[in-house]
Length: 128
Length: 133
Length: 299
Image 1 (tube, helix red, strand yellow):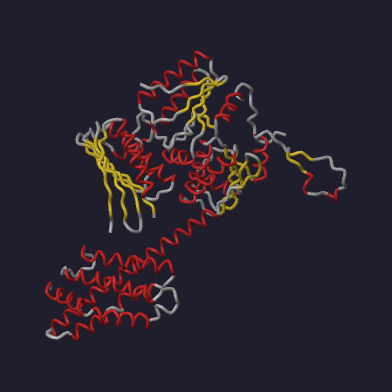
Image 2: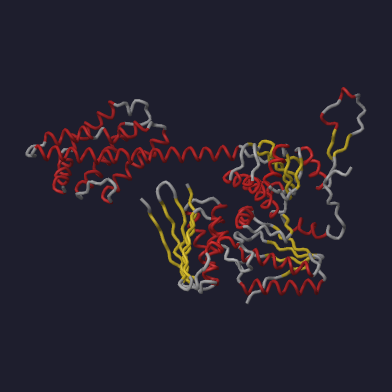
């Protein structure tokens, strides 16, 4: 049975989802990611879904699960490359994936993970 | 005058779910649906197909390309002889909060045609469709 | 009943040479070719096609225009109506095509030898009823075609009225004018997400100064849009919330879980800061009245 390859990218792990995922493949991915986060002390997980034309509730739940597990292991999960049609459909489905960070591409996603190390100024109310 | 092109597909395994998605996509393109609408109906089909396999114990789906002259569309009718849904209203409202949520409400929002009939202990029949024009 | 329809079918077959010219003359007389939108050969071909289809349907013995045997006739009329609707003919001109066939048919039936008066009357009644049904069918198809043209135009207007503007690198603005219904929201989302991809935008400012009211439904649409943008990695700021709208929202218990600012300018400042930029004034050597547009530079 195929397992989805996980690459190390600096402090993060990169997963590129290109095939339709079934139950066993999803479970295997979650297991592999968990193991690797611990093994490498990864600070983040980047999941590249730019190849996916369809993201249904099953994949959505998988992404949420990965994010939840990663969070416990003190790693951020960033989903990158979602296609516009997929984003619109997910929102209509009622899946906003609030537990997951998002970015336009891998480069931006990496930047998100790196900035986690330095505390960010999130205050937008013009405290000048 | 309505013309229809229908194909019946078995829904027993995950590969069948993939096949239903691909077939739906092809018909959606033929019906002239926009990319977003194609994505919506294929995703809705995926949701119900998974339900049929996982909760319905397997079943069949009839996928049709319909042409009514002034409008074209894709319709899918899923049928299974599974345990059925006791409270349809509840299932439509559930969303994904109940873990293995049936995604029925979501599929309904993604389609512009939706019908469901289910009897506990007998089976379930779900119809979804998306039209253009 | 079947007998007289069969007879009628024969009469039509045998007298086609008389019916068609008479029909064409009536149509020309009613001014159908005057505007030059259609050529005579085209019209003649359509007349012939419909007459044949009508004759075939009559031969089957059915007097209901909705029956299967008249499917070809209905198709011809439907194509005719649709193309007339697109070319801008009036509904009257379109229906006249069918109704003006009555006279020629009455004439040949009347002139037919060997028909009892009662049969003549019955046959003429059948023609009238049948052609009336076809006439109505023509008008209905015409109506539907006009409606679909109008809704296509409406959609085009919607698309033009929700432009996405690039304010700065990575910062988009979406001025929404008018009500935000669900169809509009779909277009807004599609335009916005496409722009996010094309511009690599990180922030989208949705300005609702031009939105008259924000009720629960509108708020849901706004939230959907911001959620979709977020899935693509862009954050949204809502600006242009007028005092009345703020009050209405509070009274309705509507919550926008997104940063909101009163003006687009405020939102732009926030967006700049979020993307690591600020506006600085240049130390200009020129006196105040020599100020040009270049004096404020965004770094």
